[in-house]
Image (cartoon, rainbow, N blue to C red; front, side, top):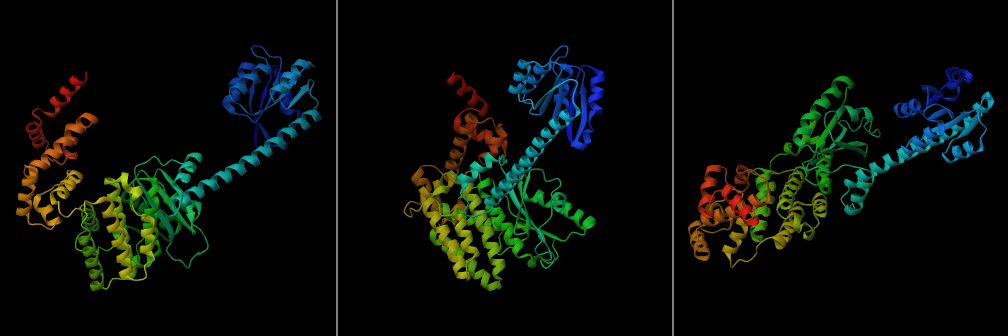
Length: 511
């Protein structure tokens, strides 16, 4: 039903208009009545009617002024003027304000009915067009979300469309969820319905949903995959209890940029495509993958990242050869191997992204690497793909000068001073004896390893003190000192003043 308002200062005329025609026959219901111009204007914005019947001559504010003010304040409803004055100037003003009809009192029933029918036709046409545009915009938004999940998507075009359709991706964490039917033979052609979508994502907050290959895909924003897993577990329990739901939920890892949502999706898709591996499990994420080596996946990826940074391509090749041999010795399945390898490469890319965001554009296409890894026909081909990528990245990032070990160590320290660095660990990393490396290092720099490390950390602490609003204890942690008192003593030793005195001294010099 459309909403009708009557604005007339004569109570008898208002009563007559209510009964002159059967408004419900024209799909209208009376939502409110105004007793004069000012009262009517106020109620227009209170009730937002679709059609207003308004008298011209009223105390305080006449009908034309009311319409003029309503238009000025962006009211786009329809008006029909009722008046006892056949004044040409009134009619001309009414036309300029977009009034749909100008009816003289006493109101002719047939004339009112005909005018209302014309307004009804206009409202119906507008509704159909609005519905069409709404559906079209919804479809366009869904297309944009699907493009986010495609490896070869044009990121610049996507960024424009995200702004165009008002999609919000101003978050620092994203992960992708795929909800599919656990039994693929049941309802194979039937997508996950809207009710399931609402129930399962209850409590997730900022989520965009889209259907891909009859599966429901959720793009979760501003929340980690671990939190998503907890919330989805609750939603899935509701589905199982109240609707006998039988769904398999796979969750991709976290990424920090919307441009990298594809990586989280690929991770979730790989888990979905191999749901038979997880038997009776309802929800799986990257943490459920079997570890393929003695250390954790993150440690393995971190080790490769270290080798890339120092440009040790021989060790990169050897590490991946050893990994391949390990898979063979365990008789791992193709699916397990690919899951683990792709997971490791995604972790590696995430680490590189944090440290070398300014160089990502110059690195090999990571999407193609993942695609080639997924499509590898043999273990040797798979190991070759990830080895080749890592070696090429080392060529762009790493310090490859083998005749200047000190330069390589210093470069590594500059990049990783926040970590718990020890000479013994770096000697092992660079394949040197720690005593020999210590002597070479001191001879080249004139200082011990620990003195240089402290100097690097203090220089970065000075920068953070001047350029940020971080607390001293926060800066202490960010430059590698877990003990704030120890940081204070080192800072005073290398700078000559405390952190607070250092800030005050620089402020006074700036003034």
